[in-house]
Length: 222
Image (cartoon, rainbow, N blue to C red; front, side):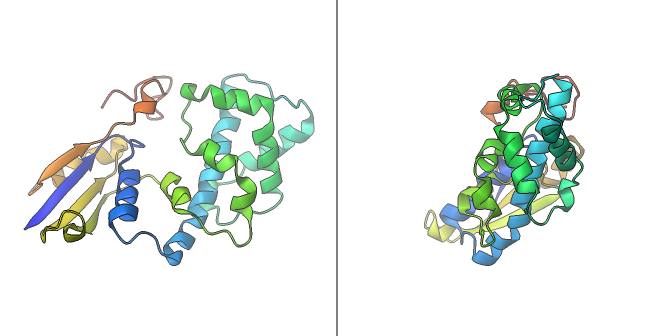
């Protein structure tokens, strides 16, 4: 018998993170090769987070604590990077982002993160830049759990139930993209489904939904 569980929920509700936890606890975990494949994703998350705050500084009219042109120049350099193409994390970007993160204005911006969209992992990564920038860096399981990568399409993960609940049935967990453009695909995932788990991020009840400008609507499904 094949048991199928669908994971549903909006983007960033924790569907992929839940599956990562299942993989670590009940699956084969992550090999060193798997971990190395996540290095660029960690670096992309760092740039994505600091760029979101740099943009929010302008939107929320928050001044930098350091009013020198030097810090603004650093912000402009970091902001100009296409984070989706980032594959390494080297100087001067490490120092630039470190200086930005330590600025009192950026910290105020971080405290107001409910007013714009910022990944939950921002503080985790930005507070540990030197470890992440080390030449021999290999992501930990915690680093991998916190990586934000939007799911597109429909992805299936098989698990061995015999190791979990001592049943020989085959078990598949299906992760479907949660962004609005992906939700139309949900209807194709309900055939022969054994169960459905709908995930909601409790931390997002008052956060702005990036799909709807100026609208606090993570609680709404469109």
